[in-house]
Image 1 (cartoon, rainbow, N blue to C red):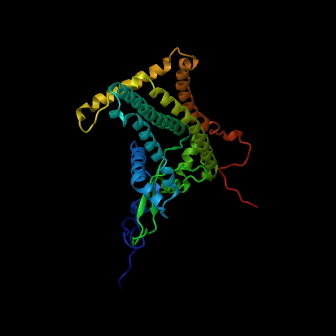
Image 2: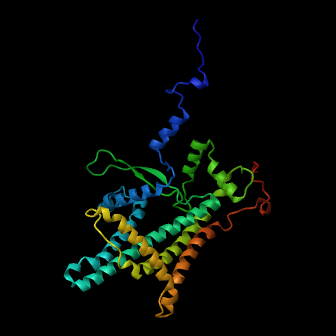
Image 3: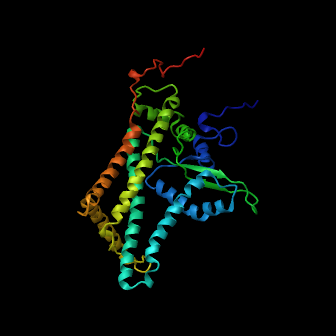
Length: 344
């Protein structure tokens, strides 16, 4: 009589009633929205993806009244007016240079360079200020406000299509204060750490809880929302300071004589062009700090802007982390969060 043997746990078949953890994880990453692997190029990749899709996908879809246009695409399109407006501002002083006398063309060219420098320095300063503040917040709280996730969007069929396409987006995990993607954080913790509370436990330790909490997500969730809300408020203030500082620095004389070339015609001159730009930035910062003796504003305005930029960057880190630390021994509530309780 033939006996049925039970397969060992280490030799289970891959087809049927058993799916290995690695296969389950791989399938999830291929088909579902998930936390994006964070590295030095994550932000660059997402930024390039947004910019190209803004121009070639989101912009045409929005104007065509596509039913698949969503809020993410609407917010992403904020890059378009910045880029177009900046280009037009610079072009106003350079596009008609051929109609001017040589002296006037040279003067207009200098203004165009300072306009371009101001636009670039504003964007660069705003980006750098936010990155520095976010790094400080992550070091203090463990909350990475730059964390992205890959969002899989199943679109409805457009006219002339048999079926909709699957589109990829790169939103921020903490883009929303009230509805940050804690579900994806829990799923990522489960797949990579075997515990849906792994991320919350890490934040809880940063917050000062020495023991693991029974339900850390309920304790840490409000803290994450508080940090994000404060950071957003401070960023809205700091961007105006950075804008003023960038424009003021770009208006310095050091930027009037930047070496500009056509990189396609003169690729060998690219290093020298970047060198002249770096020199202009260094000299421009010195000129802005020193100011001129025309009046009180020109004498101290540059110093105020540079100091203000540094202070707002520092506050964008410190304000969100104020009150984040918790001493469980001084909590008003005497409920032990590490124990289970029966609700009567």
